[in-house]
Amino acid sequence: MSTLPSLWPLIGIGIVVIGFALRANPLAVVVAAAFGSGLGAGLSVPEVVAALGKAFHQNRYVSVPWITLPVIGLMERAGLQEQAAALIARTRAATTCRILLIYLGFRQITAALGLTQIAGHAQTVRPLLAPMTEAAATRDNPTISEDGRNKVKAMAAATDNVGIFFGEDIFLAIASILLIKGFLESAGIIVQPLQLSVWAIPTALAAFAVHGGRLLRMKP
Image (cartoon, rainbow, N blue to C red):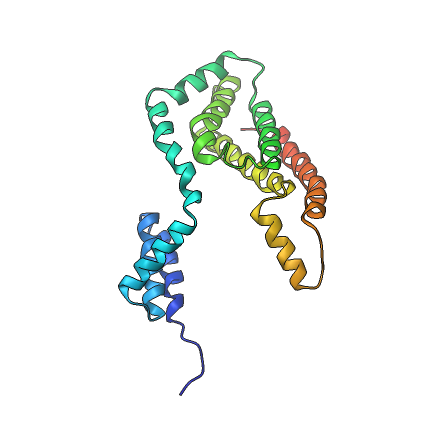
């Protein structure tokens, strides 16, 4: 009898790759991948459903931010994006670079305080930040191309990513700090979470400087 491990549980990875390549519904793809891996591992359908339910129950706090999405949707329908764009269009001092620099600092500081869910792509970038930066770019350059608009919106999303990624490690009680601590301990390196947080500050400042430089050089 072969002692090689079965590769059937890895079928879920293939389902994810194919599903996303076909641009299928992400939720359906993830559920199908879970069932594919579960059945490939020899679990029955009820056991897979039970495992999904247990995982959802243990990590239900992760889904709390999604409760705000219906509220954001209603605000967008009522003209949130249009009002944000109109406000920026009337404010000459609010350039694309300045808006994104302020948001980058805000995102890093709040993430360093553990407020990682206070902003994000769904809550802030799409309904507010992207329309505001696009309006500023259009006001300053009326002939801006569609590629230029997309570049501005992409930079807005990137600014949020940089701010949260390099800011959250300053906060002690964050999963990434615990992950780093566990990894180092497995290699025989004993460090305290406070040490990791303190040494994350220079990295965050460097990230602000590098991304801030990109914003200053950006020409939509």
